[in-house]
Length: 242
Image 1: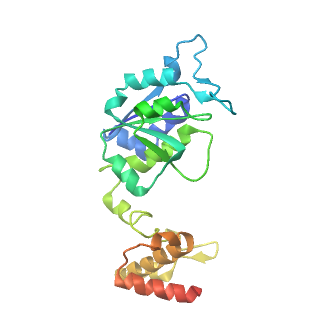
Image 2 (image 1 turned 120 degrees about the horizontal axis):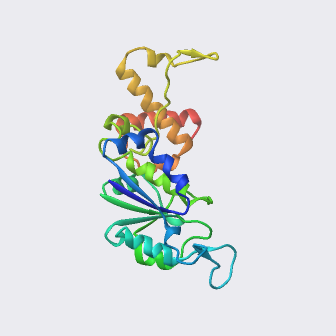
Image 3 (image 1 turned 30 degrees about the horizontal axis):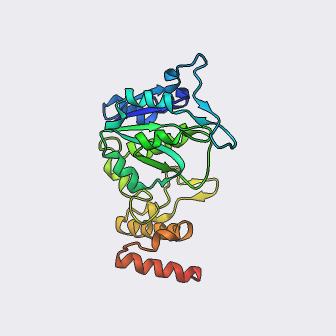
């Protein structure tokens, strides 16, 4: 996959691609990327990229001219263009999976009160919201989307590591433990040390159901659960008085 990012603050974006799992994906040739500072496409002597909104109101709006020119240089009309915005569609695991199957993605990092609507109308295919809150940096929101997407590309992370993650299926992930067995008076559950794989899997299923019921009960509303999972869930609900 090739990822193009348009930003006014490339110094926020660059370290993400040169560290950790993403750096390995780039080195392996699974992901390639370019970072474009669209301020370079502004034609006035101050390289101004924002202006006050028509109709009045607080804040500033990103001007269309520099973005149009930058997007044209990236041949964005022939690529899938993503814009992170609080007014977009919710980012979900299935949405990230869909995007991970693209060969080319272009991301626009917004700022201030957003970008001129004409940029969205001409170029943007996906307006995506990372959550029901507002942050000041379009770069941060864009990196959240990119991180959710690229890790699903074949070869970035092993398939077994993805299978039981939260949101891969209807249940959240079970608790994880590692060495030492006891720390600050807290011990790893005995069952995880037993070597009895069937019992461990049953314990993990119960913990996944319990955590999902506690933290995200909405995920269980339409979940297709096994007969065993339904039985365990019923017992958990009785224990909690639900």
